[in-house]
Length: 166
Image (cartoon, rainbow, N blue to C red; front, side, top):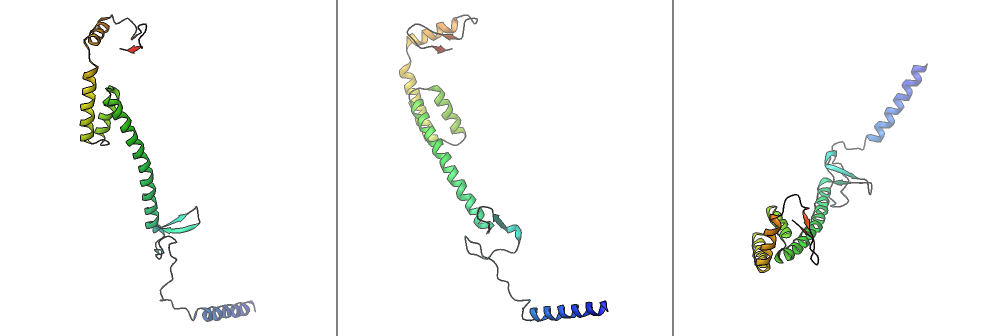
């Protein structure tokens, strides 16, 4: 008796499911969800789709990639602006004869952050400024300080003058 009731229920379910699915075309093209950014249908392969946790939507990899590139360009633009400003400040200091700034500009040139023309122009200004600052008295003072015994402190302060590192 239980088997007759079970068989009747199964027959009823099969009849109902056949009636519900009779109008479905199994070979019809599926309507795919569109990417909310580019409005192109999403790929079937789930590995080509990215879930955006910020909005809870799926986005195609093309749009995700483009967004990443735009973000990188913005960050690099800010970074390049900082480097450019730094180069300008170092160029002014090196042109005034500052050796440390000139050394930093040489390192930036080696990293391709400075053009050869800009480096050459700055180097000429640096040499001109350094030559203008040379004097016999300064050379004599430097020679005298180099002759001092090694056990003396490395910093020499003369009353009325700044303290210099040797």
